[in-house]
Length: 316
Image (cartoon, rainbow, N blue to C red; front, side, top):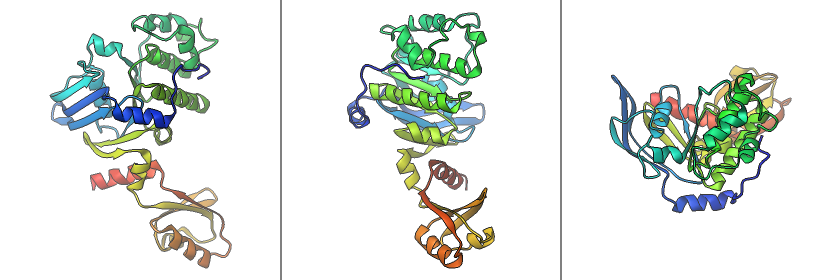
């Protein structure tokens, strides 16, 4: 995947500065959506800017899929305002500016890969050349294969190709790497990052925290239909003051748990992982109590740890 070259790929800092000055592609104010007695979105405000990957994180039922449905015009808000590049979501003007890769797609099984991509590209003025779209999605060599004959991962690549074929101003990716192997997943990340640097506004939902860490310029953590954290991955991590100390130790977990600063101790195969709010104090005590300690590694808080902590605080 990703053997084609995009014509305009400014560096990330330049793209970020341009995004700061550009009008948002998606603008939502006071967005409310209810399903019966359940409020899926509770007065959400959101701007999605060009040149940035904005990632929605949160547990099932947090409101991520509802927001995606509203942006694409598949759902209607009960209150608030929402525009896509100044147009009503779901309108012809908005659809022409939007590419979407959803969790499920009902594509014609008998059409070939290139027939699907060519047909979809025809809906968009200024669509990419067919060969470039196929290359960006990693579909070279599969052009004449019928969709029904593709593997699950290959079908996801076709769905990705349809999303990017029209040079969208807004690219919506809902769990895009489901069914992809590790190599294809990282190639898709590279392409998505290049599309954002080219100027597309990307709205991503994912359950893979590694994916969010790799791609995101901005992370919105949703819970109960509200935004509970908003910032870069680094800013989200920075809200949780903890680091990890990993090592091989002869001390039992209960003793490690009692070391200064340790808030959690878990076994990871032959190693142990200590989550500490005071890593230096933890290390000093560990070295003093276990002369045989080895393979010591100190790392910062992962995005996954920060998300779990923030959600736990929200539900407490």
